[in-house]
Image (tube, rainbow, N blue to C red; front, side):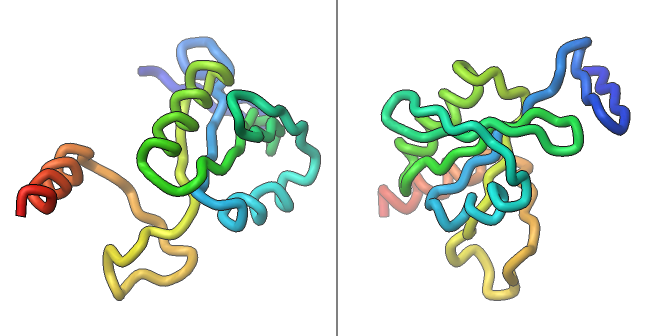
Amino acid sequence: MPVYESKHVNLIWGKIMKIAIMGAMPEEIEPILKKVQNYTTIEYAGNKYYEATYNGIELVIAYSKIGKVFSTLTATTMIEHFNATKLLFSGVAGAISNDLKVGDLIELHSVKRIVEAEVKNIKE
């Protein structure tokens, strides 16, 4: 997929890229909202979404509430209703590792491993 970037516009296949940023709790998105400063609040499907532009990149920001169902619904809404082309999650990663510190970045490479681990834990 060709990605074209400039200082003010990011394009994927000739379309403007919109990045969705999601957290589970308000505390996880508040620092982002403070950084973008100017945003529009939109209430949709029982949640609040915040649209903003940062360095020429369109953003939609929301907190999903805690849990897999809420995060799935919010992520789907951000992609389907707000036309997000990328999705980032901002927040705590639970107890994945004691070595993690505030501000560390975790990149997910495989959802399959997480799902298999969950299924295994349920069966045990």
